[in-house]
Image (cartoon, rainbow, N blue to C red; front, side, top):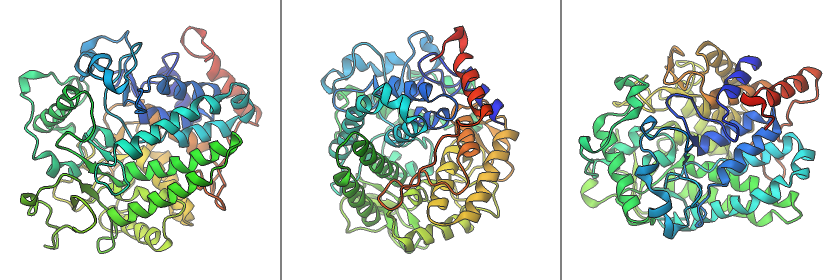
Length: 491
């Protein structure tokens, strides 16, 4: 399994970063690279550092880390939206888009500080010799400032996403209601390259894609200014990853000789805001909040039991769709214990089937009207979300459930040829094969000792796992990986 996963990452390495897959995703993706770096640290800490450095090298002046960094050697028609659609260097000029590289103008979940801290811990000597943390810390701090200040569109302290692609779970039913207000771009105005690599029944519909294109076009034509669009959603997974990374930034600050107290305190305040704005005790999970919900949307936000969505906690409405995003806050070290216990019950119940009805936790409610076991983010199980849940279960003392999920992840990754996502019931492969974050997170599960807690980055909980590089086999594999890239590159 180790060798097969390493081969996937080697095949997808470009010399400075790792593509998610050679066919469908031929560029560098933001949160993919964070997850990839977490796995790469077990093979080559140097390459893991390079992965993050390449991504952060494309950061905008306002602090945002773009969700795609384009490879100029890839033909424009290989992926849509392509660089000529985003026009980052011109449309993003006022926001400080870089001139020397083309990127998208939107962002993805902020896993990067957490990844940087784990990568540093894999080989602290190498990290210090290369001044890895001193170089990435200012960029990571600017990235968090951007999210906490420019993206607090609901006024409650949480970051909002302004496009479904930013949250990472692109086609989730959580977006159906807020997207219904968006007039789609005409079908003739764009060509979907994704359908060249996947079945139409597994991908977003043309109507949804048209709305994605309209939102991105309007954001671009507005100079990538935040707060002027028609879509703004506070998502629990996006904000939980921001909080986990804020804890990691505190540890990076301490490593660099500063105090991390203020950042830990900020992470705790964000956790309180997450609970205040997105937690629904009656439903036993976190929900997204549509910041721009209108009074005439009231019927759209009625809950399955007939109650209306909650008001009274700032702008917008809670979106009554059960997504795996509403379980991801389980990874937070200071989440109240009663909420953590309730999330475990919800994950193990009929809506997600953890350890019972499903092989892996689905991306969407098994009982929901929109559930589809194969359609992109509307039901299939994804390895990154299940890896996050495995870490969260372990953090909150659910060792048996965590061990069961870990075993299921490893079995499914191997049997599916490291698929992009799978049928949650059967483990049948869907999407791209040889997917980088699936291989990377498989490596992390193989090497992280059972019982290790990578997310407990808070005073009293600091038990991050160490990379497994001590054995002769581990060092031999690391050397083979470092020297096995195309062209003999050693990273």
